[in-house]
Figure 1 (cartoon, rainbow, N blue to C red):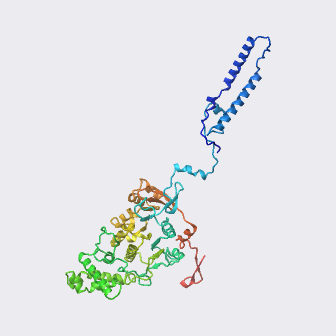
Figure 2 (figure 1 turned 90 degrees about the vertical axis):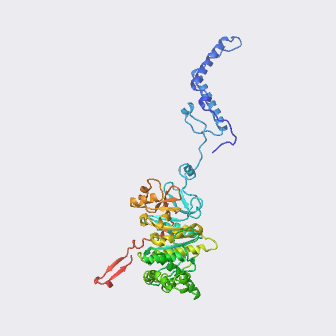
Figure 3 (figure 1 turned 180 degrees about the vertical axis):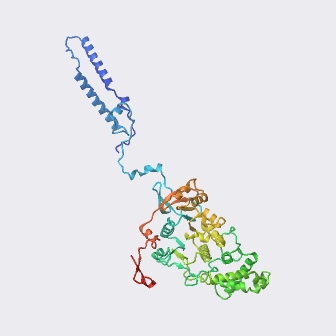
Length: 544
């Protein structure tokens, strides 16, 4: 671009500043008449009379004046700050041109800034990359910790969508790997069993990072976690309600939740009193013996209440034993059956809060029964209390796959209480659900989901499920139809009260490898049959 730095007056259009050909011809004819008149008035003496101008002379005069006019205009344009170097001669004569800036040599990529008036980025530049906006192509950068206090008020995240739509891939990449890059702590409760890896689906990722998953198995052979672990606050007078306490759930609430799961009903006031007295007696007995109290001490105290404990409560030993009889029977059955080898002892040494990644593999626990929700709730409570006592808060992410196991019964109340303290603990709880219908209408998990600051909604094939998402998260009318048409790997990304936008999750080649959970379904191995194929020994698996 060639311009001058000095500000000069703009030149007027040609039609307003110069003469037309018709005007020039008229002036030429007038000049001819003036010459003839002058010649007639001039005396003949001493002067030679001029000859009249010919047509050719007039045309030459017109061309000369036109050239002079063009030179004058070119000089004026060169002195003008802005001018247009290309013009249409006919339009120029009519005065259609305004002074304009000359073109600037540029490229398509340099001119992308012109889109700013049309589409703005859906997020700021602060946080972790998730993918790109399907509508504008802008990069999506979001993180519950960096966005807290700015664009959202809750660090909790929920993922909702049909099976196989990309929820797990987003959790493993955006929720785990990219968080670890920033030096944060990540705790995963891994529920999905993968036969090709012999454990939960996070096993390959943990192995890649040289982390040994903590595995739980009924009947022994796995890890054990103690609900009376000293790392879980030993409060024995907690109420079962949520309240406004500023601390995570303690041993009393956890023990009550386990007992109600065993009884399959809420405890009566007398049963609750017997369990609290047994808890107090178990802690005292274990301390006197130099041991760590566990659920076995509580069971012993229910069967044989201490006289001093009973009298301190204004009761007899027989009354206390009678009140705790049903809880004792069901707790004993659970320890020997449903929770065998899981909570009946001290916490295993391998259960530690690592500096980076900690994976709790619960994929071998049965889908039905109380074992899975109880263990998941114990882990949640253990983590919350451990974070509560840390001297310096380290941002921590808790990911729970198949979180619908924690939305019913007493364990839901404990989980709900722990998640309410996420901000105080620098904890981001991230849950994955298939459908809103998986959650009972009276479950505390409903309010837990509504309070999530970040929501990722994947495809819901059924219109009713999509409509439930639209209503729960107060989405714009018609969003349900968009949810039913989402493709795999895309989701509606909603941050706090802002309108949702369609996001495409982007993964690196390494992340694609670590998030592949279709190994078993894509296997090409075959079974070779021999002549005696009727026996099991005759079958041989031939790998592809």
